Length: 416
Image (spheres, rainbow, N blue to C red):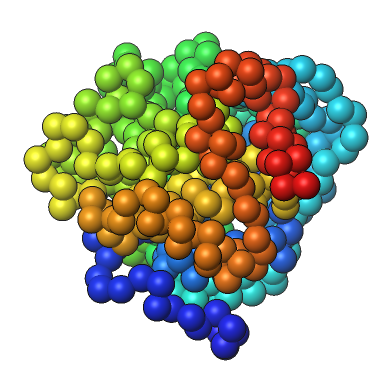
């Protein structure tokens, strides 16, 4: 049963503007255990957020140990090194091993914990890119079949599942359905963004599959794989989500997850929305919680309008989500500092839409209620949340390129 201490629910009144109000936690880049997940679910409950997007598999680690796939726990849940530093920079290599995973029992317990709080857990399996950890455990899934180690560097990597290998696709399909069963999933995110095509373009099996499909367009391989996995999930009445940069014009029965507006992707998302495509809005430049405040000031997040310019059918925007990627988030303190206030802002956006209260009123409410909302008082100062121009000049390069913890350290100094 839900803890009675969590039942102070009067913070939000009326009906929400958006039915989908989500938070995402990446536990692949840095692992956070079951207690940290429960703490996040409690915060989501208090903020009336109702979708927990669990990013447990990526290049740098596969964080669920499945009994039917023993090499996942043996190989994919650990790595031997990690590059640390600034924003997508490889400043130095730490050879300290990093590892962690959830057992099947822990996953079931956490899904039940979320369900008691009215939160749907949405699992995500990174594919056909973002799958290095899976390939490290099962190298036969790649085009080359070569053994690799779980990488400790970040960014968009070359390792890709071999779409032309029918045995590999059947294996991944089986893994996908096993995960869907474990999570009792109603919705499943299947990724398909940032796919490097280098190996697919020279792979004999992929070229043969293209010939079989009657196409010379490499993108049609991705569409074939998406349709395969989508149809497998749909046969179980499971909704499918795909990142917007992995979408294709033929993807008419999946939910678009809009994170990237670059290179006309924003215009494509607007077209999908206006054509009737259900869409979740998670613009990286407003809602990504790993970004430092010098890159995304808090007022910018709070003022975000999910209705993109050019949208004339806003009813197809089903919700909003704030993702927390963890390349630079290695501790509870950093997670709380980067995410908790932004989750509160997202809750306000998701519940009230454009009718949210003025920023000054929201901040007064937030400071008064943060101990209840978060289980701790953060007291992040305004000059950290919304740096003035002179401060930006002082720390922007340091925070972005050298030390992603510099804002947290400055905030601590301001309190003592």
